[in-house]
Length: 259
Image 1 (spheres, rainbow, N blue to C red):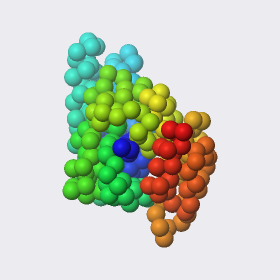
Image 2 (cartoon, rainbow, N blue to C red):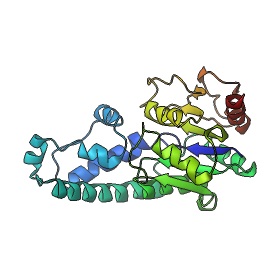
Image 3 (tube, helix red, strand yellow):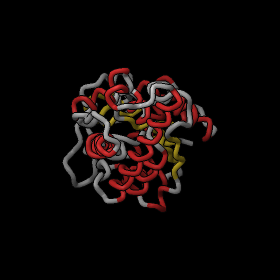
Image 4 (cartoon, helix red, strand yellow):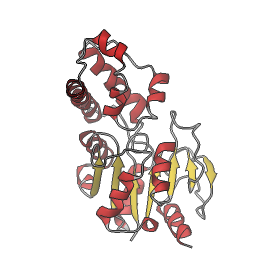
């Protein structure tokens, strides 16, 4: 059995720039917080796994004083939780409104994997409601029900720690050599690699310049028939992607890793 495990943000849809960032900033505005993240600054925040964790990074003594926030850990935790709940509401509404189109090739590869009997998983540090909204929008409600969704705070340590991928293997009851991960970031690649799972990378505007040493192969997208051909940026696997990535390419990574 081969399992296909997707990251969510940046892999299933270009969610960071067009979804999460404006949702964070709208939340900050609604709560009267003295911060708005620029695209460049948010790019740096992506090194922190998890939305609550990114929000928590704001809580310097200076920011707490300027924003009039509680100084005790419990009060700050309650504030961050409230911000994050509202941010998730804003973000899921954006997804439902079709503002975050799927990245090329995702629906096609998912359908090919389903027909081949591959278990489908999403493993993400984002809130579960946000992840499920993206999956349903990308592949439809019926196919989304075939996914195992692991998201949010289901593990103690977020990417680049391997916890989320180790949990995926445990839930499926399979060893790491019987799965392949599709990621978009260095942190995600490190998490998959540390868990022992081969990883294919589809870069986006935020991650194109990151270090993907150790990836099976790196492409600019999964691509689709009839669209512009993909660019293979690196390949250290038996796979030989053509104009678009096929399930056979992903299987070649899996088989090659077993040799």
